[in-house]
Image (tube, rainbow, N blue to C red; front, side, top):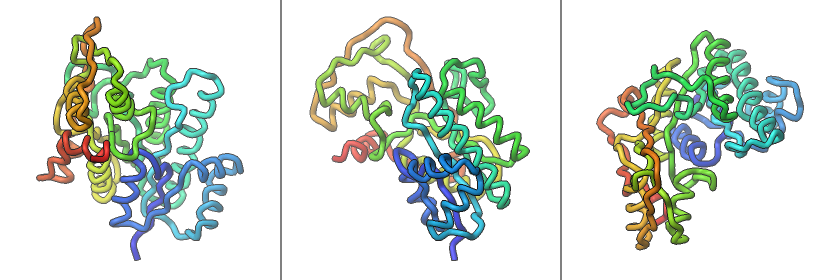
Length: 288
């Protein structure tokens, strides 16, 4: 019998491929937003979670718990939306953290690369965090990182993904919007005609890395990003080539930004695998 892994946030851009990859090695209990709402609405914490799992036919202790829940109210400034973001990004993960501690399960939490202070240098796991951010989404991620490390005495795996993209991405994601704007022949303004420098990662590559980390680690912080540094202009040109549409790019003022992560610690878990090339990953994302 395969060991059990409970995943909250098992749909969407990262959750879907992650659940599929974990499922190669574990029996996966995939919990989605409807289950999360059910657990929160009962207001009984771990008891509500265990009742939900029992209803799904799972009562044995899990070997690992993966917290990948993300509020769809990504960066809204509406007070009601911020309250909902707190419920999904903080209250719900806390319940799963307490559940993992009760069952002595391995715990993995999906944070975000946006917790770092901007830098022209590649961001490592020890780079300064943006602790004074006024972004409610970033605040929720920082709060959970600190809370989980405190609750578990640092026995938690924290991953910080950078620009994950793939066929299950949602409308608010960067790559979804870039593809849509190229298709619509909309003008896209880029600082210095280049825009941001970054190293995005294909969702199925990130899922493979994260699963190996779950199998081989009990704790640690890991950046999750691609092996190739690129920029927004280059990405738009590749999207245009795939769609046979010339992107409408205009140069705007300001300096190009940098969001490049050093994820060598994570890639060592699949040594010898360089991942999916950016061009091929875009083809798979667009569906050609």
